[in-house]
Length: 479
Picture 1 (cartoon, one colour):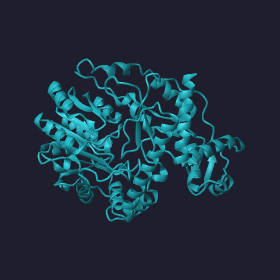
Picture 2 (cartoon, one colour):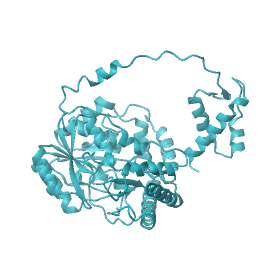
Picture 3 (cartoon, helix red, strand yellow):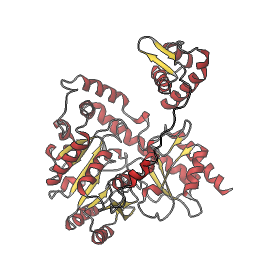
Picture 4 (cartoon, one colour):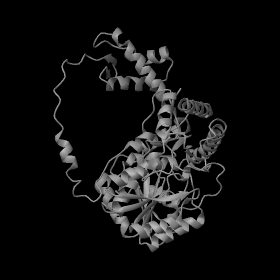
């Protein structure tokens, strides 16, 4: 059973039993709850924390948990917030591209589905794939380092910047690197630094919804550049630069989200050359380099590794390969743009908390790190193959045009007879959450799509059950 599932079930059980205790009455001890419900102490503490957050239980360190006193009756009068509609829309009449903050495409992969639902919409490793012991040990060691809780340099710890520089390779040095609070924050900083509000920004089509949301929230205008099974098409990229005058192109050259495409060496050179001739920057989102599958072969170097002219602004993160809560990433750039990136990051966040940076250093410097990378590479390949085989057997009409050698998802085109929103809704009713394809396009999509993630599920049995439920959803729509 998933940890979060057992937490939810225990919290629900305890909530039902609260009537046995008078207000202020003491609940059984944590040890008694562990023995009674055969769960871990962590599950008990998290379940009690949920009830405390709901105001049903009060926990007192050293004393235990108690039923909370009933809340005062009467509902306070609701305020009038209608004035905010005018205030929030007042700037739209003066903006070329009104800012919009739409997190729906991001929340699809961030919001945990209800208990018992197979999580094909997830974007992170399942807890069983995360290096939890290594992370716990790294955090414990980091907390004991001298100065671990003091203020870090605003650019990040030199040792961590140096590690990121060596990971990128080429002639990139620690002086070219800024430590960021994860990849999403790095992308937001890069877009704000490189393009003014109202400007166009070229993006792959389809592409990562989180980047589209960041661009629109900054008042930028995403312009799609079509891709094929080898990634972005250079001829259409050059035409888009000429037509729009854009000065930024955002690309995921390795195991692109959602298609899984990897740019061949020739296209990688073409992308940088085309951007250089257009006087534009390339934002390289290298989020999936460590999500490589065991059969991928040797990976191409990042675009930033061979970029003496500073065309490429490189983004990477430890979050995807380690834990959703290890929000440590990096920005790498050369030339005057680095100072602008640095200034924006300082204004927005000051710095990344030092304990997290120290823990990241401890993690990547431990023997457990290389073992973790090898284990994940083998597991992701196995899950990819199992999901692809199950789909081919039970849902062959969902077209998988590319089997990726990295990443955590499969991108499937729906037949014209299958409506995307209807399938997504029916799937959830059947007990499987899938990511709809529409949020991955910044213009009209060519067809319906769904993205199925295979990293956030518990294992092969849950993969098979997810496909079975998805087929049931398809069958419901056919009736």
